[in-house]
Length: 265
Image (tube, rainbow, N blue to C red; front, top):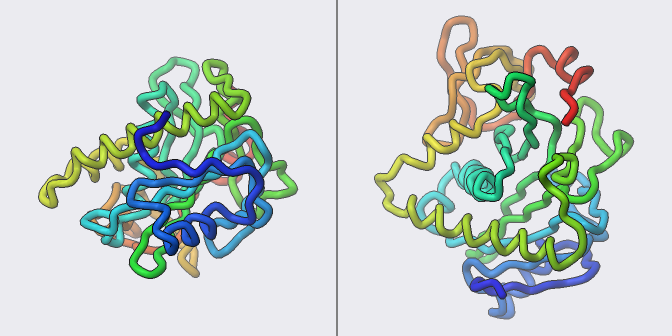
């Protein structure tokens, strides 16, 4: 059984809403979590509907509202911790700034990890002084193209990888419990407010670092992705000038070619 408090549920309206309700009833302490079979009204960024088929991870994790999680870098920190936790399970994920997780497949020569598709997303919500991370991970299935917004990245699931084969509620619960344990352990190594290890870790997992990208923050900008900032923003070189952006969405500049030819796993 997991050491952290866990509410295991069937079909729910939203794991985030349920976690907030449990928190208000003093039933969800820090590091407590809710794990559901599926959601009727799951949501992502900008309240977009999150496809919630059974067999995937739909979880809400209460975070301590201190230090990193009390900063503008909170979402990036959560993504980094999840990428680190998955790495300990032998699964390579990349961070698509600011809050998406991409599944990776090694290239033909095995020297570089290439993104296959979006495998997960993170949504942070704070209510009444409680910070909850909503986490969706495609394990057994991924949304079809018809459920992906225009211009969005293709979806992938963990079971696309030959070394991953997760079926049934038991293995899914075991995976989630291992991820949370690793997540908490890694976070505690970063608790020193002067420790910048989290930023170096985030940059190791950052998709398209050193490549030309497009940033959409209401207007489309093109630049080379230098890396990340302590604020949780991204650093781009646009027209020879380094700039920091704290809002927006990234995609590779060679989007047309990239979206046509996703590498197979």
